[in-house]
Length: 191
Image: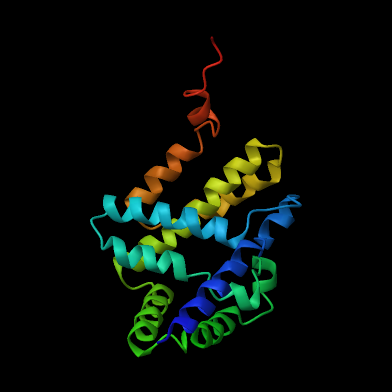
């Protein structure tokens, strides 16, 4: 692996800062979060869930960060589009190409993370997927509280897909949490 390969991979990851999460368009959000926005908070949630579930935090973080990397090449596809596309195969092919020049050790490690995530057979992969779902629910709550009530529909099916006790507990608390409370409690307007 050479420095040019690392630079190219990081520049390509930067594309995710411009790729919009397309599912939110269905709820009326015209300028939704980006894939990078989503991946960042997914990684944070993954860290906390891995801590709560006593799992390997590094593996969970890497799976959270790599899960949507193929979207730099194939874009974000919402669930309606997924009905008509073989997205899993497209993501796999894009990801293989993305990591191809990163040197055998790193390439193998990154491919292993993605394969483990997709298989959903280890506690770390289950936690990473729970973090992904939970982040969508956090975003749905924020959009709903900001005037996009259709975003609440994500709460109809999303919570049923959470597998870990920790993710389910956070989700249960999330639905009754004021999304602005964190900053209201630290803002002081008195002189």
